[in-house]
Length: 105
Image (tube, rainbow, N blue to C red; front, side, top):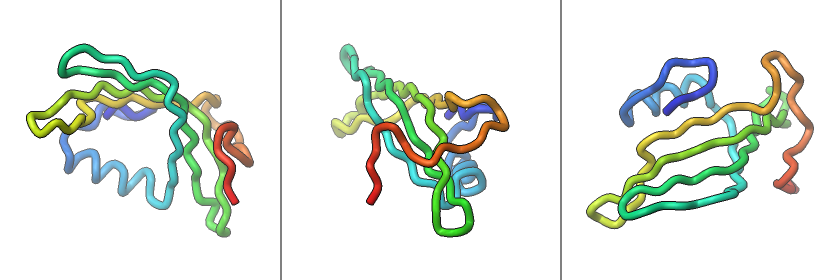
């Protein structure tokens, strides 16, 4: 996993630990733009909205994009081999009030 402003994180345990520290309470929505592949390798490209809790029961939104490389396993499952994601906003920008492709009720 290649998160923004961080070194690459490897392995299930490393990724789980990073997420526990950096994404606790977050919700993420994906808008897949493209899926292409050949044989046992494919990529998924799209947009994302990360809903970040504000501590008062509401969320601020960070809009960004992602690219995953997936590899087909012998079980037929497609697991993420590499994942990179980042924000469209400049560092220090205010979070948005909503996601452009998700309607929350």
